[in-house]
Length: 203
Image (cartoon, rainbow, N blue to C red; front, side, top):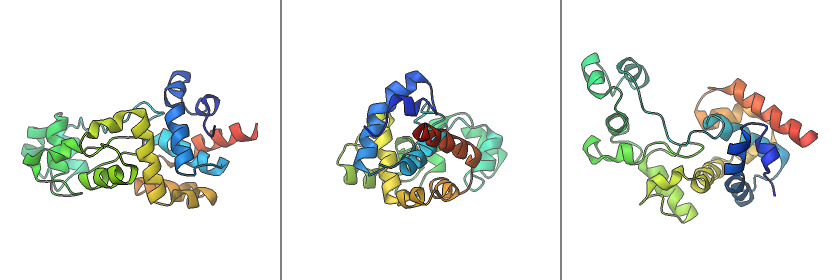
């Protein structure tokens, strides 16, 4: 086994370590996340992205003010934002309309293909690519990506497609963060979790 419960307990609770260990082990085997540096890179980032393996669905419960800040072009006035505030389905359908392979707001694709998994898979194009690459039903049944097997596998697929093993081999924690996040959000927490996993390997 590449992933064990004691390893996962360095970044999450015993109960969640038990829940996720099999799915994460299968994923690491499949995508050659198979050295201490690669495992530490992967686990630290997916643990950060999912708040310690607690959340596998995007939180879209935004207030009007938050909508205007996060998506200023989609929610360009207080009046528009107030019509959508605190309604995740409506928010997703407007925020993600006509991009990432999604149809228009009325299509419902924004909600259907909202962010799921340990590294959030978002948008119809990504669900298509993941479903085809890993031969599963994620396109027809997007909510399967909330299950540990697919939540972990989709993260491994993303990791592989974006060549994150190379950055992990170089111990480039900032580079991994930027490739996953588009910036350096949560870098301190990722670094802390990375250190905790590496400490496990050296003990």
